[in-house]
Image 1 (cartoon, helix red, strand yellow):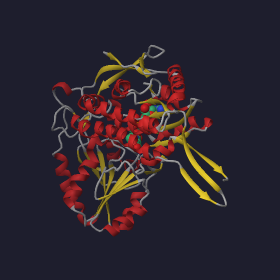
Image 2 (cartoon, protein in one colour; image 1 turned 30 degrees about the horizontal axis):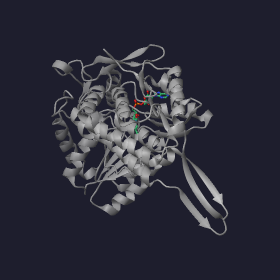
Image 3 (tube, helix red, strand yellow; image 1 turned 90 degrees about the vertical axis):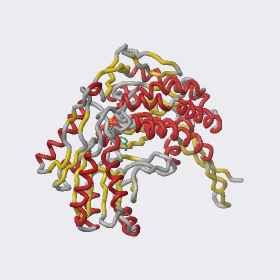
Image 4 (tube, helix red, strand yellow; image 1 turned 30 degrees about the vertical axis):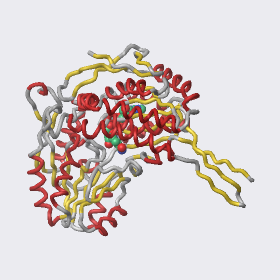
Length: 480
Ligand code: NAD
């Protein structure tokens, strides 16, 4: 079995303890590699390398950094298909999705931030009364970037690209469940000419390697994407050293569907927003709110369309749903289907583990699942399931739709379907979510802020927000 390594100071190194954890391919249920079970000593080595590298990296110009990060994008692009295979193997997602979404978006992240940094300028304020003020931005130093398993390189690069272009050195940690693309990124960084120590990648468990990063006194900021519970733990661990924190957490997103929408576009997109990536996207709509007058038609068409989805080997081109990330996660999602039944819900479709043949006979597959008949406040409609499970909830009025949409501790994203744009804008203003889509889903202009309200997070990523996060402001006031 292949042994994955940490990437410290531009070199691949074994973990200090010599201990490893198995990495599984969800589609086959078999271990295919092992990943370092890193500890504080490994994190210390990474921080030391990062601090040393920062002396030079923080003195490079934005143009120099932009060139190198652009080269990272180029190198990754030249290996797109290979990286997509790694990503699909680690996550269980269809290869077609890794090829068309995950890796292209990781490339776009590096490109976007290498361009953005060139336009990220100091601000000046001049007046006779208060003199000449320059607000400059300086890198923080060594920062920590921790990412989840559902969109591994996509989300890892979303953090490290802005951190690097702003002149920080990074200690990053991908999920222990999906370490491979981050592991291979080291090769790409070396080839692109990123100096050793500027990006260090520590592999391992959240509670051990992750918490060693979040509590490390020399790490100035933590950019984290993952579960809300983990976000709580990280907040506590980072607080004593006054670290800057960006937390992108869980969601329970409402899709609000009005009778006057373009039904076909809504239906096709709602299938995607429900079941893409096996429903393992924080932005998937898991509570589908449907205006009563079209409820029956929606149910019939939505179930029919869901039946057409193919659950299969992620390598096959016509597979719509691959495997769930782990057996534990599959059991958790199936547990929510049981809970829905116990809460009085009706399973309109799916709700079962799926047994495939051949290579994937031991894989962690489940059918896309549609539940109806549950009250908005029940646990199934309140807790994040993070799998291919949606719950249908009818509503009568616009007011009721907004009430149900907001009756959640989460506030990440929402989708509104109607041909009445005035109504859509009115509702968008009222829904508590950081990202709202009207008559579309998952469209992302990278210049716009991304993140959630309430228990879905603190702070925003993307565009200028990310560059601001990874820099410290300094106001320099001069008279004459
Ligand atoms: P997770 O919180 O279990 O793990 C995320 C990362 O944090 C992993 O790298 C993990 O090893 C690490 N980690 C775990 N415990 C830690 C600790 N105590 N200290 C430091 N690091 C620790 O989340 P997950 O299961 O990998 O991902 C699924 C979750 O991520 C879902 O809740 C989903 O909604 C959320 N998510 C949110 C967004 C967003 O942008 N808001 C995007 C993707 C996923």
